[in-house]
Picture 1 (tube, protein in one colour):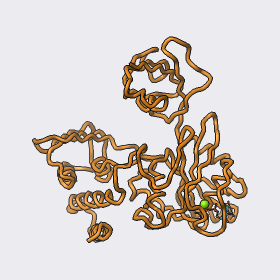
Picture 2 (cartoon, protein in one colour):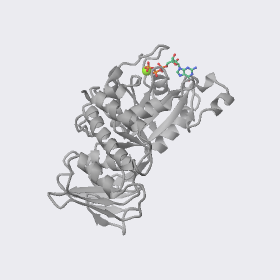
Picture 3 (cartoon, helix red, strand yellow):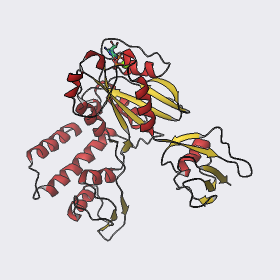
Picture 4 (cartoon, helix red, strand yellow):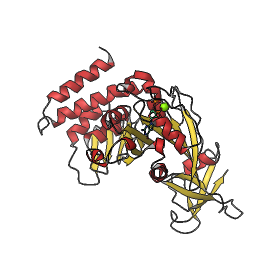
Length: 360
Ligand SMILES: Nc1nc2c(ncn2[C@@H]2O[C@H](COP(=O)(O)OP(=O)(O)OP(=O)(O)O)[C@@H](O)[C@H]2O)c(=O)[nH]1
Ligand SMILES: [Mg+2]
């Protein structure tokens, strides 16, 4: 039996199973099995840096936004209106066949946008170069979901992204699993939890061949979130939803759309500015200034980086070898407990921080 058939079989069993206290544990196990099979689909480790995308994309700018949507929803039109790029636009499906990058500057940040071919249902299993497209999405700093006003079927898109290990607008669950050689599973909870019991935790870990581990639960996680931690190759990415071509409908028509979205008519330039704002806000960027050890800080040209960035990641932005040779950093600004505080590589930076990196 192939992976896809096995997945379908489990999904069918889950659909047949009533959700109640008695079946909770069994469902947890099925979910774990399912996640394991789905991981095979995503393939390889595929981290942000090394992920083989199949599409050759050269990242540039301070952050990268990808356009994801069904064919002909207006992705290329949006790219063209937001940047100076001219990606081909046409009234038929699959006009765009590869990645088309564009860039725009906003509030001092250089933001790259990647226009992609449309995805179709089954993309995560490879339909219509779907895997290449979704791999690019996994590497994004923000995903822009584009929907056509006449087919606002957001569920198709969410299913494809979800099935490819992408978690939208969620934080990584605060759970730590440390493997051990022996001693069984021990679970420690630092908060009161209601959604996940010890037996289910054991079942899920067992499914992944883990029979001894220390588990620390710091948040009331669901079994799905716990499985995400166990599987481990999830990308947590912010997203915004755009409903395009609103010039073609009335206000009344829009009232029946039940999820939240930004209304846009790209072709008419309607709300392109609002879209730029939404992208900028969604990226949650901060300004960080660098200061040489002996000199003055450069307050003219901040580095624009995403909020929550660690000193380690900041080093990577400055120079390839800096992380390797890192000794300590000194911080002036809101992330420091006192001005000039010495910090390690895991320290998280905040907006307006001034940083000196001291390397060997
Ligand atoms: N009325 C209207 N038409 C639009 C709007 N935006 C795009 N279109 C039209 O929609 C069609 C598809 O636009 P594209 O930008 O090529 O769509 P796409 O999503 O890039 O399509 P693929 O590359 O094939 O996936 C074209 O005929 C556009 O002129 C809009 O805001 N209003
Ligand atoms: Mg296109």
